[in-house]
Amino acid sequence: MTARRIGLTGGIGSGKSTVANLWVGLGARLVDTDAIARELTVAGGAALPAIQREFGPVALDSAGALDRGRMRELAFADPTVRRRLEAVLHPMIGALAQQRTTDATEPIVVFDVPLLTESSLWRRRCDRIVVVDCLEATQVQRVMQRSQWSEDQVRKVIAQQTSRSRRRAIADAVIYNDGSTTIDNLAESVQSLWNLWSSAQPGDAH
Ligand code: ADP
Image 1 (tube, protein in one colour):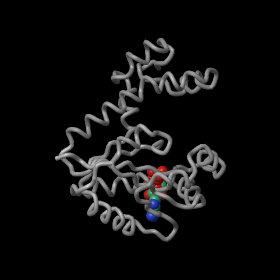
Image 2: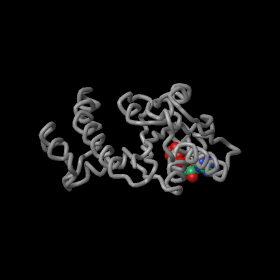
Image 3: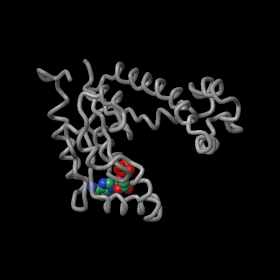
């Protein structure tokens, strides 16, 4: 069986992780690109030899993992650093995601991709795109509560992210998750999409 590949995205605090878990609860396989990036860069991770070849030992911390703080400093001083790191990591993330899709026995694979809107490559890897959307005020309130951040901190992150309208423009389905939306409401939305997309339909390929 070939799994239907669903790309899931949303701004910080939109409820993307909550929605991802609901897909998993119904039997989807979750492929989380941030988690893969972390997996590749822990001590002994598969990306470390290539990272060390590119940047030298300066990129690794004393435990042998990618030193993220150091890389942020380097990237601040030299704008090519981020691109060079991505050039190492992105193909490896893509390959692992691909592998975890090919061997999936589940009818649906959900790709959790924070930068889906910005990546035409990732959008091409998805059969359908689901965007979780809510008002900015709701994002601020949720993240302040979840992560004990200040309002200013949350607003800065939101300002760096893609706008809600650009995200919605790439969506095959938008799940609104605002003030009055309960987890049960979200579960119902996910269930309807599951019913729609978990079995192959004619004219699917796109
Ligand atoms: P994201 O992954 O988009 O950053 P999360 O799924 O982690 O967002 O949601 C942010 C916070 O808001 C979490 O603590 C989550 O439990 C809570 N949350 C999200 N949606 C709802 C909802 N509809 N009702 C209640 N709490 C919610």
